[in-house]
Structure formats: structure tokens, C-alpha cells
Length: 339
Image 1 (spheres, rainbow, N blue to C red):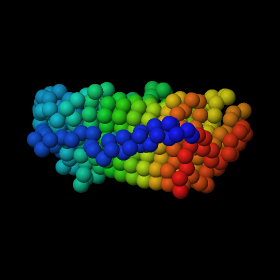
Image 2 (image 1 turned 180 degrees about the vertical axis):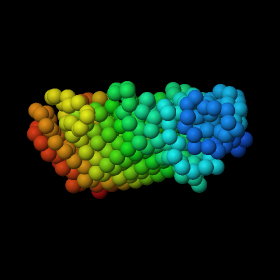
Image 3 (image 1 turned 90 degrees about the vertical axis):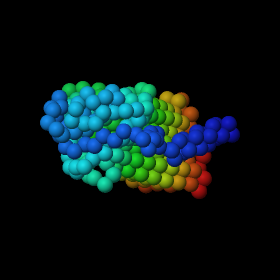
């Protein structure tokens, strides 16, 4: 890696880590408080004297009491809970559209947002700002949209996830989280999601910082990037990416002849830049190729005009590539390794 590219990646890492230290949505002390007191995921909501998460988000978006069971939104809003349990969606939650900022805070409760099947469980649209704390997004099947981007979350705005779990979701790309905006993931877990083509855990085409988080047990089918698929700008620190699997096919997911089952852990591609510091990338594997295909590296795959991967004080080990085609267990191209 040349000196200019190294400086560029170092600058990227510094900028993203600084951004990650500040929450994306700093609601002021005077932020409106909307309190969710029911686990109902029914759509359309009914007027029953109880405030659901669906109603709370819509009131925050509109800065009004569109649904009278919840307090009206007023500028920057915060949503909290008096209940714990499962919110079973039918179909999904409203898109977050509020540019003033929305905080959804499950601290002190045990909130599981589940199911949906018609799209991501929660989407943040371009221009909107949101922070989600202490919630679990899980068990969203593929549904009728077989090319859906984002099984758990889809972000095109500015989103911070703090102590969030995203698990057991299915999507075509970014089964856990699909990002084209600015995303900060800290103290969170993205696990056991299945991506039909790219990014079982995380798919990034924007700007993303991952801090003190775990990405594990995800599956990327056909092309790979089971843990992280990056074609944007990503910085990762103090995190673990392990136990992810890339495969050429999976039950009920069509195989694509001639593609790669590679980059079981991290795929950096198409102009992407990726800085990894003080992190561990281990025990990932390319499981199999059931037809003529290329089974590439299981640890880190850096290819197709990617800017580069910089590894700083990190461990990449015990990753296994099986099947046909070129590649070794761990391949790091145009990268800096410091130990």
C-alpha cells in the first residue's frame, strides 16, 4: 500500500471513529417524550387508549397527534417504553422521516421487534436522523419481496445503533442491516442473519463505523460477504467478526452459476475502503460450491477496484476456504498489518 493510500485510510478511520463517539441524534433535554405502553404491532393501529410503537413513530414524524393514543411529536422526539416483550409486526414499522431527530430507547426494558416479512422492520429515510438503543430486531422472513434490501434495518439517513441486537433475519442484501447513509453501530450484535446474495450481516454502500460490536454466525449466499459487504467507507474498532459462512447455495435460495462463494467474513469491493483496528476476524469459512464457481478467501476479500483494507493491531486467523477455485484461507491485498 502506498503512502498516500495509507494516509487516506488513516484519515477515514479517524473521522469515522470521531463520528461514532457522538450520538447521531442528540435530542435536547426539552425533546418531546412519547411513551409506548402496548406491545401491539397491529396495522392499521386502532384507537384503544394505548400507544403502540407504530403510532409513536408516526406522531414523531408528523410533529402532531395523528394517533391520539400517543403524545404528539414536537421537533426532536424520544420514544420510551413502559412494557417488555415481543412486538410482532404486520407488516413493518413506519419509515423514520424526521430530520429533527428521533430517539427510540428501550433501556431498562426487553423489547423484541419481530417478523414483518414485507420489508425491513425499520427504515430510516434520506434526510432523517435517528438513534435506537437497547432493542432487538429479529425473525424477519424474506416475504414476497425476494430482492429486499435490509431484513432488520435499512438506513439511507443518519442512524446510530447502541446496544442493539439484530438477528435471525433474511434479505437479498444486508439481511441484518442495509446502509446507504451514515451508520454508527456500537456495543451491538449482528448475528445469524442470511443474505441471499451480499452481506449476511451488514451491507454498506455509505459511511459506516462499527465499535465494540460482534458480527457472528451470519450467512452470505452466492457471492459472499457473509459478515460484512462493503462498497462504501467503513471503519471498525474493538470488534469481533467470527463464525460467518459464505456458500454458493442454501436451501430455498437459488444458486447463481459462475459467481463467488467467498469473503465469508468481510468483502471489500467496488471502490470500498475499510479500516480495521484492534479487532478479531476468526473462524469464518467458505462452506461449499455445489457447481463450477470460485471459492475464494474466507477471512478478507479485497477485490474489484476496492481502495484497500488497512489492518491495525488486529488478528485474522483460523478462517477456512473449501471447494473449488483460487484463494487461500485468509487473503489480505494492498493492506497494512501492524501487530
